[in-house]
Length: 239
Image 1 (cartoon, rainbow, N blue to C red):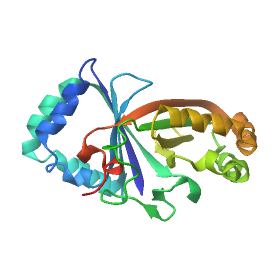
Image 2 (tube, one colour):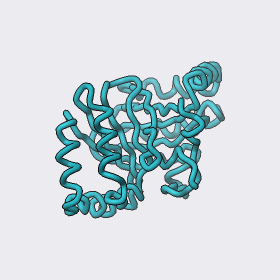
Image 3 (tube, rainbow, N blue to C red):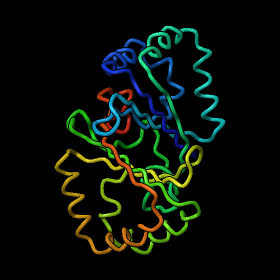
Image 4 (cartoon, rainbow, N blue to C red):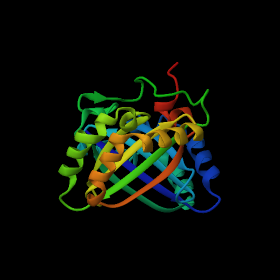
């Protein structure tokens, strides 16, 4: 299993035009990658004018065949000509699920969500949903110690470790020794309450103290799932 994260940085003021281009293109032509889509997200905090999308592929070959096949579809050429001028930069990275089953409720360690599976939430009735991405960069060689500390102190914290968790992943290609955590909250107050509760948990404090010497940096940003059913399969109810 391979998780791809793609990030598009748009020119200022081009966000709405990007979403309009998705609608004008339609979705049937890109079905090969939509069949592996987790979701599209736009930044609420952090870098302005960014779109992030996540995909789950069987393997590198699965990714290559599905993505590269799109460039052979002549009917998509007009979409590329419309969308690319809206962009300042494109980047991607590959991730793999964390080696702890409690941290992989949807992908990895026997879990394998795909579009059409159970939905996490319903954007139609919970439009204020927020997804938080936390990227923890560790010193080289310290990942085993980080996961052992998670088992020793993090997991005993219960909900402080696993509430709202979509999944934890590790960088495979690109910058190494990075842990990506994704959590989804109903709204800003739910996130605030979760963080306040976590700080008060003694086991979580012990985990934080244990991993502090291993950490180079920790960054986070808040994202909003795309309000388009075809681009947010994890957050819309199946009909």
